[in-house]
Image (cartoon, rainbow, N blue to C red; front, side, top):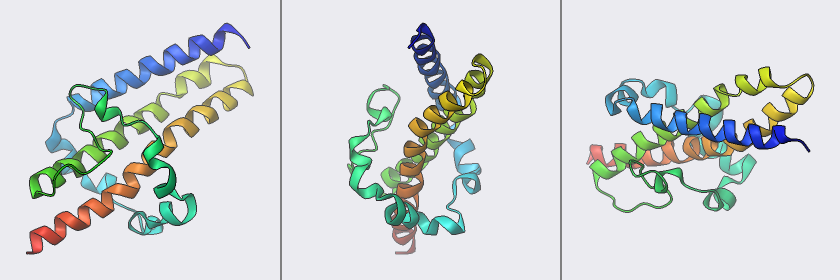
Length: 155
């Protein structure tokens, strides 16, 4: 193992923090206006594919919730209320969290350029594996939350 592992860990952390910062600078309205980017795709079956194929309901609570770390964050580990406003904010924050982790994956181009082939593929693959579960959690939770919001609006 080389010093490159420590360097990569520091770069990865800094890039993630940059993503957190930038995604919190994006106004809430921009997320709301671009809901279609975050909508479930047909193959996701409103999030159920993550439960059936990845058993997400069994392991998602073991992963850290970044919303609890950041003072501007929104804790998403548990529902704290059932009001329409809270649930709509929760849906919005799942979009923000997903965007943060997609930013993390996009920033992996840095690692692709830092390393020679085939190490760059291994490093990028490992880092995608670190971000993918967090994206899956947001894509699993959001349709379920949105269903509750829509049901409440229908009443």
